[in-house]
Image 1 (cartoon, rainbow, N blue to C red):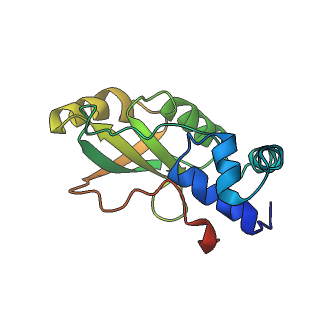
Image 2 (tube, rainbow, N blue to C red):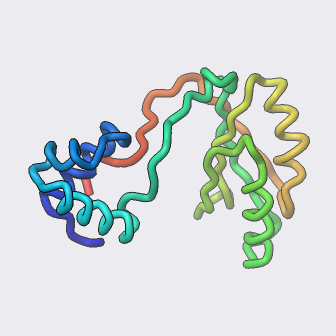
Length: 156
């Protein structure tokens, strides 16, 4: 969806602030009837602008206060190699994010752990066991400064 108008942007901003808002309240906030707002939201969802609704949980509150940024190099970038790695990394419950990269490393992961000992376990049991991995480089986040769910819709 290449063009968002002012009403679409207002819908998206409101949903970012409160993903649990009722359609009636959303419609009131953006100046539409409930049915027109529902149609607009359906279009935004079908076009992939709104990818879903979920609660943002605190890893720290759930006992996983350590975040590791993990750079991974594979033995090659053949389609089969990438596919096998990606299938396996999706099964690792502590991997929060995985990106295929250009540059020095093939993948960058964000991994949640309870503490250093737990990260060592994740490294041994999961990361080192991933197929085609030849190098793992881990760094540990000292403090979270920003964790945005998405960019400001005005910044598109």
